Length: 115
Image 1 (cartoon, rainbow, N blue to C red):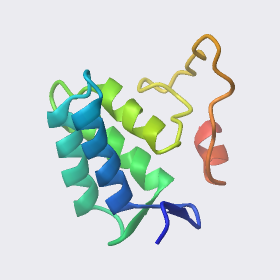
Image 2 (spheres, helix red, strand yellow):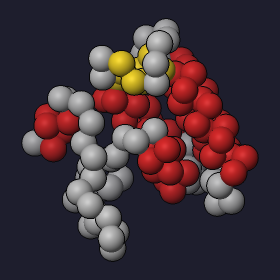
Image 3 (cartoon, rainbow, N blue to C red):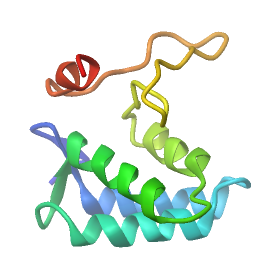
Image 4 (cartoon, rainbow, N blue to C red):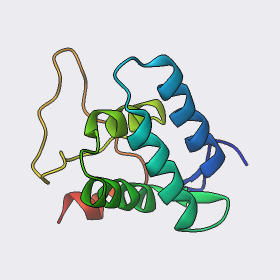
């Protein structure tokens, strides 16, 4: 399976990107990313995960992991070219200077934005 197919992302690709972030991004929190990957592998389908399931796993990680590093999770999403349309408090986030509109991947994103 490719990295993205039919609106799903291969779990192995997500794990690889998390490992890449841990090894190469200085402020990436290894504990947060490892726990996220562990939780991801226990939920959803076997080989791939939808973006909604990915966002749900991130929400659970932040909710139940004390001191979870949201920067690391958002960095992982950026490496996957999936962009969280809202910040973790469900408020619209401001764009960073020089950055275009966030990429909203998948057709289910409209439902998230209408919440």
